[in-house]
Image (cartoon, rainbow, N blue to C red):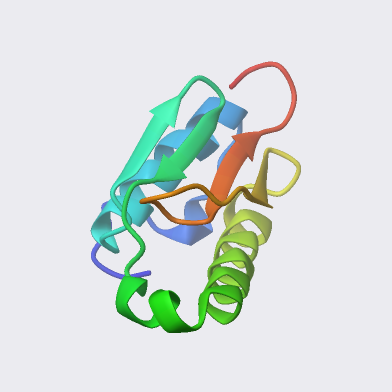
Length: 100
């Protein structure tokens, strides 16, 4: 993910640090992330036009992209979960443990 203030190689050291890193990186990619407690949801899906006709494919792709980010930058701190709801991305990031 380009255009962010931090680099994925920065590796988060706490769940809150991981959530902050995720919000910064995802905002730079037009996901419009919003954090509520230990969860980050994306208000926008950058692939929304394609998702209308290929929802399962796009949601699976988004889940894989975000799971890869979690594995690279915040292993054991965040999880990418499919959590589809109307008018937002189908994936949410959730802090693991109690410091989110």
